[in-house]
Amino acid sequence: MIVPMLKLTLLIPSGERTALLEGLQRLGCVEIESSEERDAATVAAAHARSVRYDRARKALKFVLRDFSGDPRSASGLRFPDDPDESLELLEKRLSEHGKARAEAAALAREVETWTPWGDFDLAHLAALRDRGYAARLLVATARRRDEILADLAGRSAAAVRVGELPGRLLLLVLNLEGDLPAGAEEQPLPRKRLSELRSDLASAEARERELFAELAALSSDDSVLARGWERAENEGRLAAASQDLTPELSGRLVSMRGWFPAADRKAVEELLGGLGCWWEIREPAADEEPPVRLKNGAVTRLFEPVACLHSLPSYRELDPVPFFSMFFAFFVGCCLADAAYGAIVLVLALAARALVGRQVKPLMTLLAILGGVTVLCGVMLNSFFGESRDLASWMTPLAPYADEGGTVYPMMSLALVVGFVQILLAMGLRAYVSAREKGWKHGMEPVGFMLLTVGLLVWSANASAEAGALLGLKIHEFGVNGLPIGGFLASVPKEAGLALLGAGTLCLFLFANIGAGPAMRYSVLFLWSMYNYATKIVSDALSYLRVFALGLAGGLLAASFNKIAFMLVEHDGVRDYASPLVLGTVLILVVGHALNLVLSLVSAFVHPLRLTFVEFYTNLDYQGGGRPFKPLARAESQDR
Image (cartoon, one colour):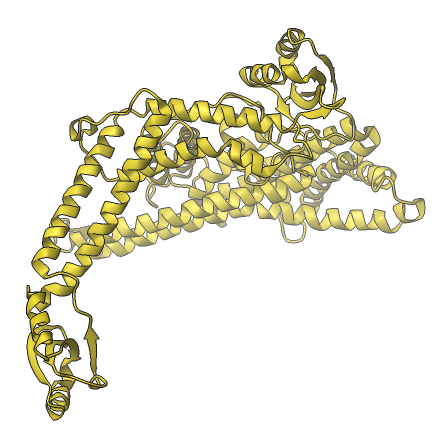
């Protein structure tokens, strides 16, 4: 549900603004409306210190991402009690570690470059230069060796081969003047001899290890930094909120406007009563759009991130989460459609839930629920890694079976039934919201669509029963594994279906397109509404067949991998697990089912979203665009 909000407007002496903001922050239930004069630079500056804490803590985690030892035994360094001093210490150590690491990496590259040249003394080259022999180092292409040496000899330059690399020669050349020979490039002289570079590298790596150990030791207790971040963030929030208070009467008073949940009215009034201010609390006006806070049960709340992928509902809409959550879980289970795949998802989600942080745990719980629903759907479809098992018929009501007409897929029929149920639910909710917000006349249009839908189903079932089929479809025989849905519809008198069709048409004629001129409303727009309904109801209902089709495709692909894998060890219908080719069988099964599971997971996420955001939301006339409720509250570190 969407939490009802109240509008708060108040005036308070300027000297009480700090007490007001601190009280509201402790209360944690009032969102202050942003002022038009709010300075973004000032707000950013207010949060600068908390950003420093956050950046330093994240940098520490990144540096230690591969550390697996006991941090307390790495070094004796610990954070001081003062958070700001701890922040400065951490930033200093992180900077020193970064510099040491960069220095070690640069030295490692130098050592790698000069190792093939050997540990020669630069003083010898300087002595040669003093005697008039200019030394140059060349890297020459090996396949042009003879040409390069001949060129050097022709210019009276002495060349000595120092070393060799794959496809290249390392040459020391004396008295070479002018351009380099074709196929050669000059290597600048090193700044130090190789042994000195190696010594510097060892020192840099030792310093890097020492700093890494100190950082690991500091990571053993993050509570000081967490406390400092909370303090800095709270101060930043207060400073930012202070920007939203508007000066009045030459600054002697300040005004504030905000929103808070109606359930917190008593707490807000108690706070304001002790501050000596004037305030007004009222219901939102028709032209105001309050922020949105969703409040759902423990299970339904897990599906709120799914709704947020589209957008939050506007304040005066219905919260769609309780109405699509179970449908969404069922669609995911039917798209995966394999009990073994569902068990894998369930186990991985539960394992990940034990490892991730508090903020991610709800997502892992949702994934575990979806995995559990997939297990249930897979059992009902009798699919385990694409293979069926010998289960009781009451456990597999959706499994395909053969009759005299061919293979029957109960899941296909159920997908259509669930689709019509969700569409009718969306129309009913739309009628309720329209009547509540705009008046009963606006609620009659979706009622007309519902009457047309039910009437069309009843009439088509009766027409099919009378003629034996309607457009080649035996609608009166439609059912789900013995459940005679078509027979039930056909048992309703045909005249009742016609009456519902007439009533629905009359509702659309009288109440559709309210606000348009009579001439257009009762002619062109009415016909356009009927045409849209006739085409849309069919396409929307058939769209739910994707749930069956994706589950069937995943099952067939899994069965194909099984068949290909066991062909390696199967002879005359007997599987020889002692065959050396069994390793190939295992490899095909693991890779094939892993690939199929990944593809099925993508489909099981995308297509239920599509059914929710297109078919359900469209028939619900969902507008969205709600603004999340963000009250001024105290910060709490997730790591404490």
